[in-house]
Amino acid sequence: MKHELAHIFTEAKRQDRKSQKYLYEYFSGKMLGIAYSYVGNQSDAEDIVINAFYKAFVKIEDCQSVEHFQFWLRKIVINDAISFIRRKKNIVYMELEDAENYEEELEEVEIDIEKIFEAMPLGYKLVFNLAIFENKKHSEIAEILNITEGTSKSQLNKAKKWLKEYIRQKQQ
Amino acid sequence: MAERIHKTKTTMKKLKDQYEKISIKPNEKTWEKIESKLDKKLSKIIPLFWKYAAAVLVVISLSVLWLNDDKADSIAEHWVIKSESEVGKISPKEMNSNVVKIEQKEKIIVSTKHKEMSIEQKELPPAVLKGETLINPVPEPIGKIKDSPKIAKKVEYTTAEDLLFGVEAQRIQTEQEKSKNRVGKIDFPKIVEPQRIEILGIKVYENSEE
Image (cartoon, rainbow over all chains, first blue to last red; front, side, top):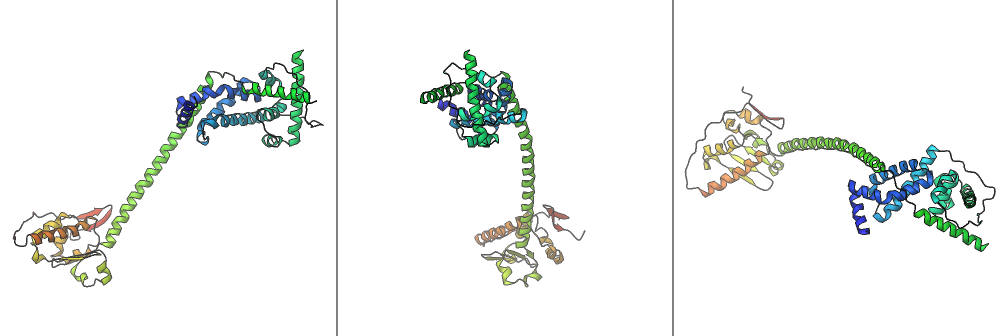
């Protein structure tokens, strides 16, 4: 499968449309899920995915190998999603007085992650996604979102509190 | 406290695992939109490619023309046909350069950087010499040199084909050596003298008598 994917990637580099479509079909579900986790609705997420795949295919020469392609594409999707949110939506970052790590227990329950992304406030969501799912440090998040490290930390703590409250409500 | 942290981390890990498994089926038209964008990009690239190709073609054409021009000039600079009166003026420096001298007394001296070759007419049947030189369209006025030395003086430039003249002369000399004992004469039909000769836009000859 890896070998086949590598061949398809090589063909896609030659702008072969069938290979590009194959790569799209292989990665689009995942990329749409990631875009959705930022914007919280499918229509906007699809617009982001369309632009991200278009950029990826146009600049595919910049991507070294098929192993890197998924991470490279993911990065494009996340950057585009953040740019989209900045363009279209007002993000309000609420400062928390106490920016210490929030370590309160989260209940082990079955969570519908898509529902969480629909409901979580935008300001929390960006920091939460970057910190938890992309393993970004607060300094990196601060640079990406053009905020201070303190704001990044407080947004993450607030997001965790919000998640705990959300899960509690769902349990009731 | 430690148990709480553990539970939180476990929940976060579960959340992460769930996140990595997210897959949302895109709308069927999503690919069509990507394809259409890619096609538009391609259609923009192609005319741009033709524009560049046309520009490159023009540059190449101009370069070729310029090079040809330069070559003709270069030949003219290095190969000069001189009349008898000018032969006496040739400096030793000129003797080392590529100079073809045509004496009015039908003595041809072909001088190159490496050797000098002299062909006396008395050793060669005149008709043959004339016939051979007439093959070359540019030194055609040579036939006129006898009657009109002024014309011969005016001929300053020649073409690359003149280079062949030296080769022809050498060939004639070789043939002559081979057939020293043979006597023969060939009369070639008289060729009409051209009014004007232009090569690559450069006037190399004009009959001033007309």
